[in-house]
Image (cartoon, one colour):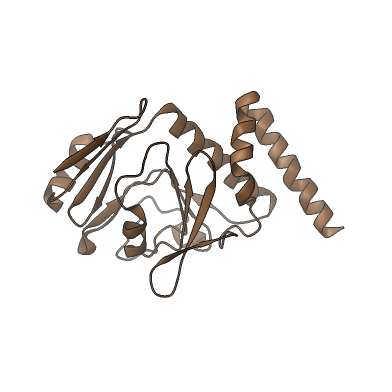
Length: 216
């Protein structure tokens, strides 16, 4: 059975009872093209073609993450929508953005990440312009991803993986402590009224002023 959703330009199709071999074939046939993004979780498969709004939001949040790490001296390895696969679990995903932070040194310089030997990303970002389809939290928990961020147009929600392998909502990021989680929607709105260079510069200045006031 398949379900499809088409709000605006974004398209999501979810199919069930799909074999691992079919998932692998779809990845091979798509090749190096950026779309569709493909996620697979033990028989359930999602194909997603993002909208302009989706791509803009994920890029803007990516800028916020980068400048926060830059101004606070936090090591960062960005891997965007890299395809991660764990064959022995029959799981694979392509997030909107993902980062190695605490494990940055383990991912540094690697051209391929093997989840059978390497740790998963420390932080995964998912932007939801349309109603979510595949249960990504179940997928991410199964792969042991410590932290997931979800942005749904109005707010950013941070999920932390607990000791029992379940996500709990937290107020602060584990990997980027102090990050202005509650202000992300406001910063995204501000980006609609100016160019991205000035917008990013204003966020950078805001961080510097914040850090100065904390140390003063």
